[in-house]
Length: 84
Image (cartoon, rainbow, N blue to C red; front, side):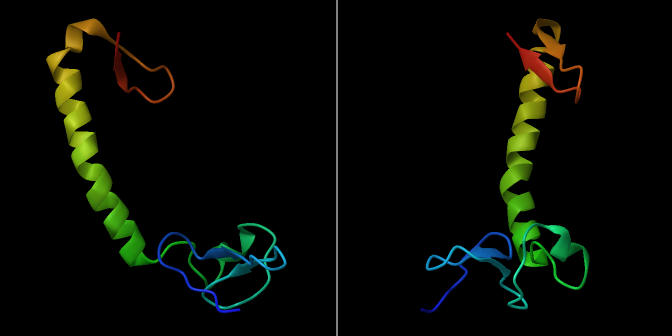
C-alpha cells in the first residue's frame, strides 16, 4: 500500500495497521520526541504557507480590536482583546 503526504506535519499513521511513523525517515515513532532530532515536524515550506494564511487574520483581528478598544477586555492569559 503506497502512502503519500499532501500537507501537514511529518507524522504519518498507517491506515492498515495504525503504526505511527516519520514520513521523512520512515522510522516507527510513538510521539513527538522523534522530531527533536534530525527530522522536522513541519517543513519550512509548510511553516511559511501557514504564516501566510494566518497573518491576514492576525492583522484583521488587531484592526477590529483597535476599533472597539473601549468595549473589549483583554484575556488574562494571552492579552487578546475580546469584544462582548
